[in-house]
Image (cartoon, rainbow, N blue to C red; front, side, top):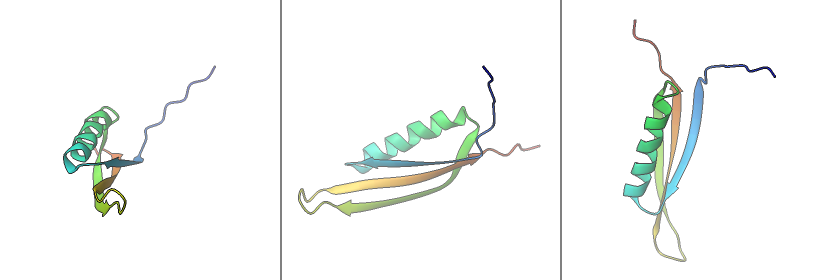
Length: 72
């Protein structure tokens, strides 16, 4: 068996929730998880849409993570 390790340079993740507070919590948890992979947030895009059936908002976000550059 052969193992190969490569640094992940870019990663895009999608999140959705029924409230803004829950969405923020999900994003913040994943930011902390990705720090272990040496990834930092490059950009965040978010939006809200209303469900016509339930008349409730639906929140979503896209977070682009990129490899953290060393500061030497």
